[in-house]
Image 1 (cartoon, rainbow, N blue to C red):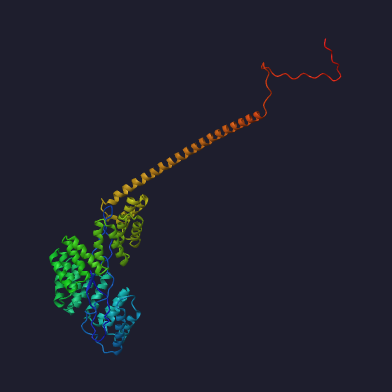
Image 2 (image 1 turned 180 degrees about the vertical axis):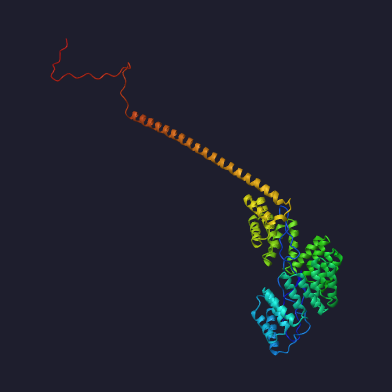
Length: 487
């Protein structure tokens, strides 16, 4: 789906030309497709990766200044023009810019271009309801204000309004102004999105008849021929567009896709890199480069591209999901887990991050209970839409076996630990017994040594020759006894 850049008609009132400019493609977030373990990188859906709002080319659009002679409105519009030139879309939107346009609209309620610019500024701020009101009021003042109708239609598409309602808006502009290029290109874009490239080509060629150097028209023609696999015609249209503007990032990206479709991978990837160099917000080109890097197992290169996408579109589901896979491929399991958990948190409606988390837990982190939780969540979210032979079901069986094996391993470890503790206890008791015996023996030896030393210091009297017991010495005679003389 293309959209018009939401810029402001801010050229000075005298000699005013209105907002216009090319179309830039945008994509909405859709869940990545993933059907088998290990998870494969998800390709962005055709309407994924919206580009940041840009400033319009002020050289296109209305061909006449606002039909007013109100001096206050003219002065307010001139003040707005000065404020615009000082800002030029860089940095936060200055409040006085909308104030000047509001003054102009208050001074002349029929000044449709001031109302249109108020709508464009509100849309840039994200105030979509306010922008819609201003666009509708501008159209009621001037039904031929093509860019107000084009922007209103693109806004309604963003808000999910029925396609038929949007188509009627564009068709009304074309019916009232056959030279309405922008509205005709929007109709062509809708036909291409619907799957009718031939109708898109017819409307685009009608637009080129009125504006032969319309770069958005050549982009559409190149894409429509590429959709039909007419790569030679697609390349011809892309080359014509690049002659108009050689450094157009959108057309460079389309040329890269054409080269890839022609199986010229080297030239295609080089051209995609060139598109990113020209415009870092070329998210479609970054997705393509990342996908080819993943296929080549260049996980570092893929992670770099996904990180750049997320820097510009932090909630992009495909980039969050695939960044997790790229980090897993790098062996950075913790950061991979965080990226996938972030994807699941930001997009609770998406089942794919849960499948990728289950694979990460099973394959790399041995967290089988967590893997089972994620698989059950995935199966529940997929519901009846999940094929009967989806790998998640066999993974559930496998993870149950792993959990049982893990429990058995844990039981065996606990038994082994208990056995080791008992053996250690027995060993300690044996060591204590041996130590006690050694201490007792040492004590006995010490006591014997001490006795020997004591005996050496105090030797015993000599024993009789016959070995009998020693006799006590004879008792001395009493003191008053008279000795008997010998005979």
